[in-house]
Length: 469
Image (cartoon, rainbow, N blue to C red):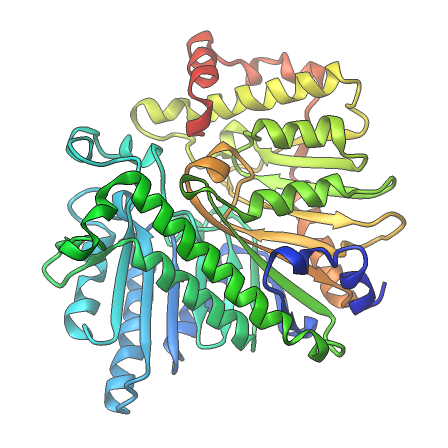
């Protein structure tokens, strides 16, 4: 497989939908352990000279996260001492998850805001589906089910880590995710900064006194408080972002002959009818050829109907799909009613497996559960093998779990990477093989075992509230 021939041929259509960023494959390193992610990101923050851009669900308040805040503080202080007025910090979190409890993401970041208010901006995305009196009626955690910012960006200067993990202690210690360090990619770093600032335009902004200001609180934008007007504004802003970057990068197409790796960012924001990622995922699977192999990983398996249909009825590829066992779910041992969440995802898995069996496709489509004691499985993404190849030519990595929430409720960003770099392909192969070392195949016998039992009330709840998971 050659670089440009493969991109312009088999995967060339990606350029028609998404911005394309060229990178030397030797500048990409696949990490395997959560502590690697943490230590490298902390070092990156400590050495920041130009910018820090972070997007996450929340910024926790334990020892590990406090050390990250200290690293950001040190970088800001250095910029002041060196009179580097161009240095800036942009942080995007979710409004409700970031406000949970008295000691939360907001209070964690307030010292930065107070010390460096001219350099630091903290944005809090607020779903348009909670407004008016519902903001005050819905209890914590329940309000988070309606819709969240789920985008993950960990960027310093012109380097970034592609990852699906959050900024919480478990994601630096026991949660198994995916981590990919990309160095010296200025154009895509600029894109990520532009994305966060664009989302910031329609997010609340945190102030130094721990209050927030709505993006459309002034009289000039009073009509934006109307939900449909708000959604239209956001759709136009994000469509413009994609179009401008796609056109800019297309003008560089003649400069990519010596590159072997290409990154295509796609955003999925269902509440605003922005469906870049849905279109790309569906098209990748529909364009599979006989002999192709696709591996999908998700911590929470709950495919939308169109994706199930595509996998079971439309695609000709072979599929290996891995998800967390109930014991390795991020909700295992959670308090109150959340303790039933692993059983709900187990219900979705069994239903999907039954559909595969009914379609006589259980040899072409194989499901696996990840099980490893004292671990959380949070890995998400896709690896694509073209027919006859022994290493993947394409991978998708980012925040999406390929589920109902990812498609319709939350804000997501995913990167499709096409590469002909043999060393990088080898890293990608090793990455997913490590996941399957701790996986057990789902079959009809295991579906009927006591470990797979789902209480009837949980099954009823899952079937009636599928779009929330």
